[in-house]
Length: 405
Image 1 (tube, rainbow, N blue to C red):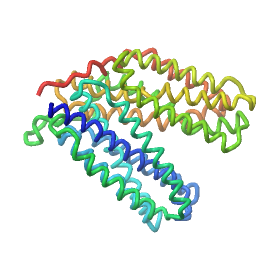
Image 2 (tube, one colour; image 1 turned 30 degrees about the horizontal axis):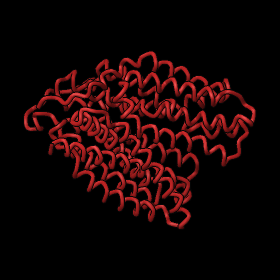
Image 3 (cartoon, one colour; image 1 turned 135 degrees about the vertical axis):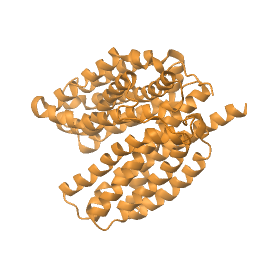
Image 4 (cartoon, helix red, strand yellow; image 1 turned 180 degrees about the vertical axis):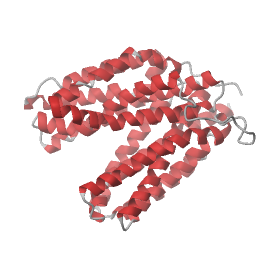
């Protein structure tokens, strides 16, 4: 009973860490314009600065798998979720572009490690509870992002500087991280049995890149490509293609995010009833229906129908990434026969899915130059159909089995 209670507390603790990550990232996004004006950056200089956290995140992910395997996901998640908001204070306090870029690079590295560690801990909690919970944890990220956006608007209205805002955010989130971190599962649940005391076999850059990870990485990358495309182009589509006002156009992504978050709150329950493979197929069907509503026509009277379509798209994409995370983590544990395999597999998968997020906006932008934005968004049917065709790969997300110690 005590073990079950500890696992239940860990579930909410991990959700708390996801909530923090959502707040931190959203806080940064809301203050980018003031960050730019504060350092008097040109568009080109801002582009370089914004590239730094992306490069940092991809770099951090390459180390995160080995760190979680060596020390366990819990201690890495504890440290990373404390450091992430503190690291964001550095570029806010920077007096020149070089220091700001270095600060954002460090922030990105910590963010990449955080992403892997909290998802690995989430997979460990699923094994302990023997039921799906990762979708609800991802919902906490969405709630955090909404809270971060609203608090950012409030900070701007109150006249807080970027540094004042980020310092206040860091103080609050670090306090929550310290409390939540104390309730995570013990490091031993997914730490290498050698505990770092015995020599480990030499590993190459190919270690952990199994066929399962590659296949699921392509599935997750396809889902995140669609999400990245919608997040960056929904408002532009509504304004340029459907003649919506700027205020109405902003509703497309807002509705998408709110519905996606709400769907994730019930995603674990649905997955427990119908299984991951069927849920993936149903989700893709919803996403296809939503995309069809978005693209039904170009007259202005279809704007609200398109906004509804973005909401349906949010419902369809909501559970895909959490399911694939579970499939990667649980499948790698069964393949390797040890719990510490999950961290490295999740790190590889996160790299691929993050690549999808980055590729989505660029692919749509490139295609729109030749076939228009409506035609470019229509091309998202291709990755969605691909996910449906290979949905069976997510079968490794069930049953959730706790490995023997």
